[in-house]
Length: 138
Length: 165
Image 1 (cartoon, rainbow over the protein chains, first blue to last red):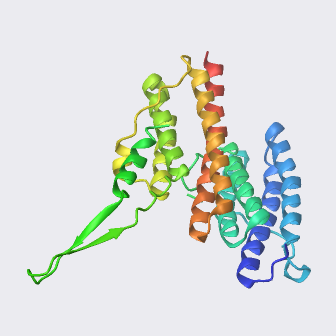
Image 2: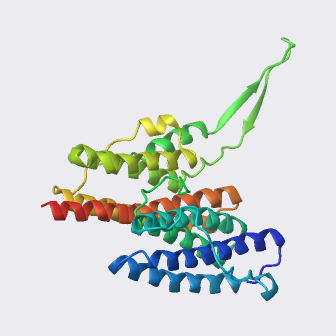
């Protein structure tokens, strides 16, 4: 479905921007991580770009946000530890973004938003965050 | 499941057919009897019942394996938060009966909890489809995400048990 209601469009745009930032952060983190963690960060860049495409398909072309040239994560990525922390925080923040999108959409698009919220919360724990009753940035 | 019939019994008792006698200030008049149509008891919310069952399962696992109290206690508290958000009362939370794990060994007991969490995350996600109120959708999405995140957390617990044995 292509949404034109400004309130719904705003929640999807927020999801796209948050994922664009996450992709950029994965790039920063990848430079600090090694082995399996680096491979996971690189794999997530690809997976999240696919998410962005799926989200963009819900909007008219003119409503799809352009990719920003850079992003500064709230937790600076300076080493492997801060890379994990930063990626965990960004994923927990994404849960709220997708919860908002789920609340403003219906049908398959709502199911998509719920699935992405679940994946984001799982990924936050895999990057070392503790689970939360209502995942958010602590 | 922790005593799911208790709720239904209480609600059923409230909803039984009743005849209400309407009082009148004039003592010469007979009170009028009004027949009230019986109302069906509201269906118990399966998400609330499931959260109560999860808390019972965690309490049972902690009782059986106290060494897991740290991680499992935190997750059980998160489920209490979910249950409250979904409308469970403090009385319902206080009345939860521990559900002992069917496994007698610690790692299979954790595996049971992982299966319960997967099932809970799916139920919560499915429930968002039918929810009408946006706030309910939002709450269910947060809870579905939280329960999905319990799976890797419990897998870490299980892995540590394996590594430690």
